[in-house]
Amino acid sequence: MSRTHRSHAQWLELFEAFEQSGQTQAAFCAERDLNPAYFSKRRRELLEENDNGFVQAQQVMQTNHHSLTLNYGGLALTLPLQVEPHWLAQLVKSLAA
Image (cartoon, rainbow, N blue to C red; front, side, top):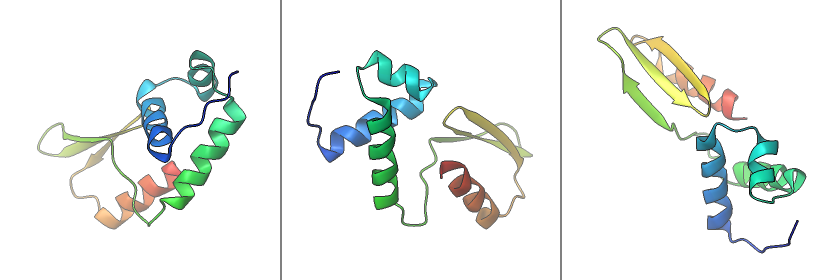
């Protein structure tokens, strides 16, 4: 593995690409010649640094008039529209931890 200095923005782009890839961390890192342990360490550091109590949803789409589907990472969660926003925010934050 070669040593490459990456900026904060480049790491964030890599983490976004990982989330969108649907790959395991090991496969994602192997494909990009990244050290998986360092990738995990940097990801954890930057997520903690940016933790302001909110998480960014990747995509929310309404599937019908009675439910919505939240796609986050590789997870698709369908919920009734009456779900409490605070409960949903806590769930997403827990999943992102």
